[in-house]
Image (cartoon, rainbow, N blue to C red; front, side, top):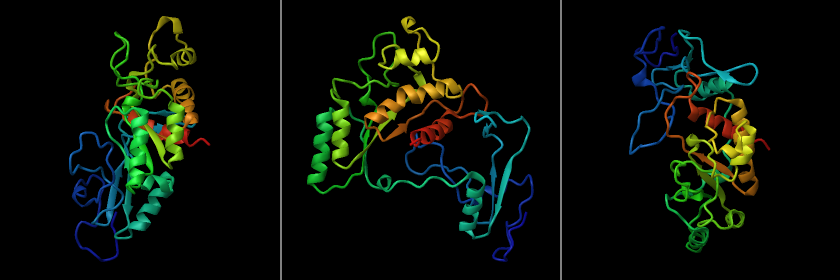
Length: 284
């Protein structure tokens, strides 16, 4: 594959098996910003200084005809070659022709977001947003970190407070009023989620979730997190997410920190969580 146009005589030809184009690939995105502190390496993108960019998609999972997902056949190679010279708009258009165009960000998402890892009381948080307004500090999104749910009040023997779906009532005695107050101030709201520990018996939604997943609620057996199980995915959003969205949550901060592995080979929970959250949160 050769990028023609005569603007360079070097590194504009790619042959299957070449691994020399990496240094001239202009980069794409990063899977996560966890533990980032300054510059981080980027995965390959569809633009390259040489005029030829190569994406190796051989390890990503596949969507199946029935709407599910699965692993690729071992040993198969799936490469995408973008030979567009400096026609970067053309390369991006070709990528969108293959992948579909990404949804446009709403205007409010491009504003300032307030995010602090702190166990706010709802009155303290609303007072802070009022102070921002009084001092002409513009914000469009209010981020509530993990202390929105039960963290320090998890019963003994139930694990840590890292995962949770039940409001911490000592900090948020009236969650609906809190969310309404943020909306009245022109702020959209996102809550932090660490879903890896599944749904345990102290959660308000546990009986409904256990029933949906065939677990006897009286047993107290945790419902394990399994994003590769279609039944779990349906219940995860129907039982856990949608009621909170109806109460006023606008979007989710999916904070997955448990690696690339799931029950199905090559299915990355973080990627699938992002995809399904966007798809099912935007259902309306």
